Image (cartoon, rainbow, N blue to C red; front, side, top):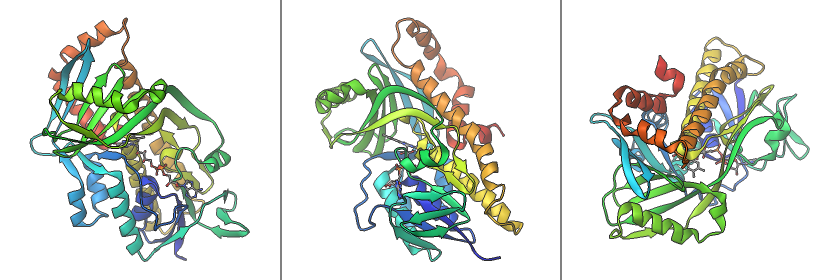
Length: 381
Ligand SMILES: Cc1cc2nc3c(=O)[nH]c(=O)nc-3n(C[C@H](O)[C@H](O)[C@H](O)COP(=O)(O)OP(=O)(O)OC[C@H]3O[C@@H](n4cnc5c(N)ncnc54)[C@H](O)[C@@H]3O)c2cc1C
């Protein structure tokens, strides 16, 4: 059989990971990016990766890239009640790590470096304007290129996705934005913390003992306020007034829960933020995407082991039916958690009651660790 060819469009975390991972199959990969590769990668976010996903990713990286990840054995969760912070749950492991934290820029750089070294990956710098799903082709001007599988990893705001799979989606827009930046400080913080504050959830993700990134989800009405003072004052309050902090430029991201009803057509499949967006409160977006890529790899590998082609096969159908329910459940679950922690005079007494003893429920803690590590269905096995 002629060597099969797939195309990966988009150089965000989804596209880079998909191109690198799938290139380990017996296929050729065209990796299409609209950004010039000489351009500096600029993604100021930080990503926390679960141990199972880290192990999977690590197989495709160099040993020395390991030092870019900051491993953590503890996670503490706090809840703000009448201006006081209560540490209501502690996750702690002696033997294994609970999370691996990496700067998106570092991860993108190492993925790209590996992609450039792969003989079966061709990097094409161009913007895809049209996908012909009927003939499984992408079009650059009058030229068309045919593929056995087209993966659209083009992010949440790309127009080609709605043209391809329509505009039917489930959405809950709480009119929130995520504020994020790096902070240097003079105390020691080596483990992540999540604060459920009255303004919205704030995650602290250290990249070493003296630096962390924060992600604070707040109402988009705050966009017009003096964000720098607002963040500075809150961080001082949380970390103690005597702590010296230095905050880099704060970047805002739009956030909402959005889930496309359809994310494939014929031999084209949407992966990553283009198919669903989950709230960043649980740091699960890219973790779900890694699980999607893992599954896609398995289905293609299985097909190839039987000598079957990728094109017009059951791969996309099997992928959608195995991953769609889990991703939707995750997204809804994260939204529910976020709503639970919102300040509400009626539900707050119930919340206080539930949270007061939650740290003693070891079964619940173990289950949440498993689910955020392996996903819902895998952790039930
Ligand atoms: C503040 C914040 C914090 C987060 N923290 C975490 C975390 O801790 N853990 C976690 O798991 N997830 C986290 N996430 C989620 C995670 O960052 C995203 O899910 C992930 O980055 C999405 O990557 P993507 O490649 O799908 O999309 P994008 O990053 O949007 O990439 C899309 C790419 O496609 C390119 N492109 C678009 N159109 C075309 C075209 N027509 N032709 C060619 N190229 C095109 C774009 O230039 C872009 O480079 C966080 C998200 C936010 C907002």
